[in-house]
Length: 419
View 1 (cartoon, rainbow, N blue to C red):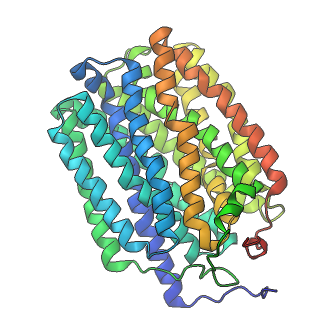
View 2: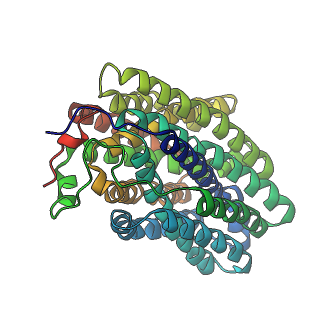
């Protein structure tokens, strides 16, 4: 029986944990800038290469395919080798790919470039949450991963702004070059100042990787509910994030820079507010029930449907207010659902579990939603294409509600069987 005493933390370990959180959150910020450059300039790309909406949507498909099929390999590596050097290599790799975008002059080359970007970003997306979970115990992970995921709306917003503004004035290729520099700088800071924590250091018992341990993920209902619900949310959020700049240009008649500015401003304000608010609600609610990490994303997904409906199909006067409220509500669940995932598994398979999460949420989420929305748009209009995201928001709510029945207590990771 493991001791119920919490591991003590020295001042040095607290400082090391804080340094890791700051640097990894900064790199996550850059990660999402890079990811959302393309939606900000996709109307330029479409015009230059003379392609359809479905082909534009396929650009993210190739990115996500590389992202997904890299994740099992990086998950295996992350559970067996130090993660710090792999994070540094991943950041330098994807920054280099962004520099090379200036040489792209065909649609097929852009697809290859976008797929290569997915390889680097998949590595970071798996290693960083697993590493942070070794610094912080399970009752603090909702707070820590909420801070880490604050970078999503802020980075996405700046990605729209950099893409749309720089692209309009200097061409869309220059947007990618500008976004490459911060990744290199932060990678160097991580190499110099961040420490690698002992695997499972925040747990009550030492991590042990045994045969059959990974197979427990397939029987872990709390884990499966968190990743399947997150996949449905990712379908919706990915589709909305990808196509709204185009929607604002085509339906609202705005310029590229205006659409990018509005999308960026709405994303950073409401996404940031939603992420922080959802994290606070879940942290306080978790003191009464461990189901909070599932109930917050369940409620937020359901509540996001009415404002999204008004955004896509209502009068133009409600397009931006509806979008803002919907994004705020969707982002409420970002921190809690990631905390639910890492809390549902043992430390020795945490990188593998995050790899599984990334594979599923993208395979069933934003790898396919932009293409599906684009295909519907080609055959009808973009309003109906975006309407498909309402269905998956409701589906996500149902999955999270069902999954809340299996939520483990906050200090029960050591009770999850190893085989």
